Image (cartoon, rainbow, N blue to C red; front, side, top):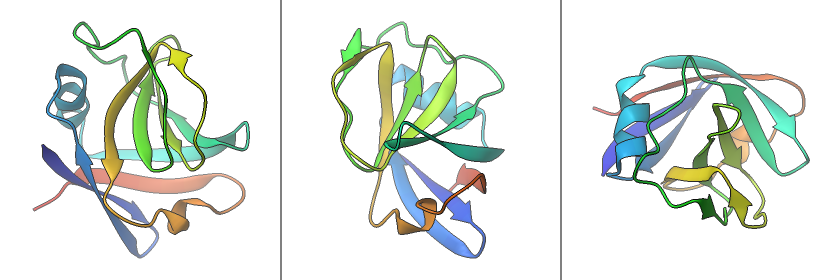
Length: 117
C-alpha cells in the first residue's frame, strides 16, 4: 500500500494506492499537477504523461465512489465520485481514505498528487 495525498487548493485528501504493478507505476510519476474535468457526471478525469503498466491487471473493473483508476485505452486517470458499471480497460489504482467532497466542484479543478510523508 502506497500512501498519497491529493491537494485541492488548501484541502488535503489522503488516499492509498494498491500495491500492484499499475499502482506502483502511477506512484513513480508523482508528484503530478493535473487539471481534472468532469466526465459523464460520474468521474473526474485528467491525462497522464504516459500510459501505465497494466500487464498484471484484470481486463475490467467495476468502480465505486472514491476509487482512483486508470483508463488504459485513453491513458488517463479517472477518479469516480459515483459508482459506475463494469468497464473493460479500467484499472483500479487505489482509493481515497475519506471524503472526496473537495473534488466535486464544477468546472476544471487543479490538483496536485504527491507521495504522503
